[in-house]
Amino acid sequence: CLVPVAEMEVLYVSCLSQSTMSAKSAISKEVFAPHDERMLGAAQVKRRTKKKIPFLATGGQGEYLTYICLSVTNKKPSLVYITKVKQFEGSSSFVKRSQWMLDQLRQVNGIDSNRDCPEFDLVFENAFDQWVASTASEKCTFFQILHNICQRYLGDKKPEFINCQSKILGGNSILHSAADSVTSAVQKASQALNERGERLGRAEERSAEMMNSSQQFAETAHKVSVKCSVHFCVDISEPSNLLAIPLAVGMESRNWEYATSSRRVLGCI
Image (tube, rainbow, N blue to C red; front, side, top):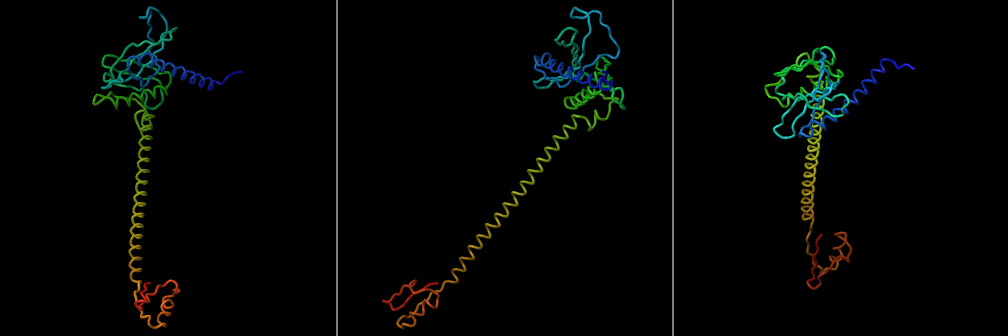
């Protein structure tokens, strides 16, 4: 059973990506963590021009994998480094080789701004390297991280980025998109809080209005009750007057008390 070439390429890239991620995690723990540094990004690379090394400093011969890593110190002020890390054939450990301060970087060359390509150049004060990343997407991600780090940690001495695609340096980059998403979320949360504050303010105003209305109603009711109170004094020497009192005010006789000693009755309605 033959596997289509396209599927083989996808499978190869997937396996390569998994092994690269595993290697980067190991580099972060073995190389940078012991020096109180955080690895911000890395790219697996190889030289565009094959450089043969017949005898290695470790005392053996063989092939090796190379990673260009970006790291920052945890202590303030922050120091950012670009480090070349190698893993030699037959070894599971990683070895730190060349290292530069970020402010020693003078130029980043993306080679072609019109297409995705894995090639790139890094120009330092005292070094010049021509590299090929394992994939074009890995180079793109590495460039985005590198550009963001330069914008954050360097002042006027930023390196020149040439022949780079707009998505790497512009608003379409992963980092810029993430920043835009965070900013948008903050703005939406702020707007929601403002709207909630306005609703609470309107509710408080309505509550105050209702309280004022209730107070005014109570005062008005009190005034009306005072105005409607009638005081009278009736001479009860005449029996007809005595019987007419409860009928005149619509009340039963048992609700009234008569002061017969004074021969007058006092009432209030």
